[in-house]
Image 1 (cartoon, helix red, strand yellow):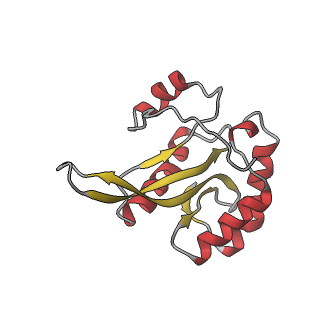
Image 2 (cartoon, rainbow, N blue to C red):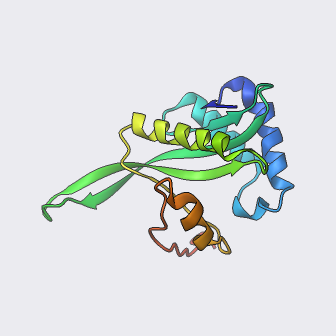
Length: 159
């Protein structure tokens, strides 16, 4: 398996991976519908703010994907007087099909890191859904440098 960035011809294979996710027990972990994924996919092809790395097998079947977004946040500098604009990658979605060997799955993570570093980003961040087993994440992902940093709360202002 290899990890590479999505191209226009990958849409149908990415759709199949999305459908696989939606029919899996992990569907609750990613919010959104296919039309939202399609919008991110098209944006990743036409602009630099979004990226979609794919994990594909030798038959070009998508076995995993991530949806990445470039973000800029103001952060008070170490001097306490100035504000720096810090670029980072927000992981909007991440999915690897069950049964994919760990050695192959980490190729997708490496592609995510490459995308972020190539843009001068200082970190990768993402939210976890309620019910996500943080302790399991600490054990499994902690070995590769991921760690829970904040608890996210949300108030929906669209209502």
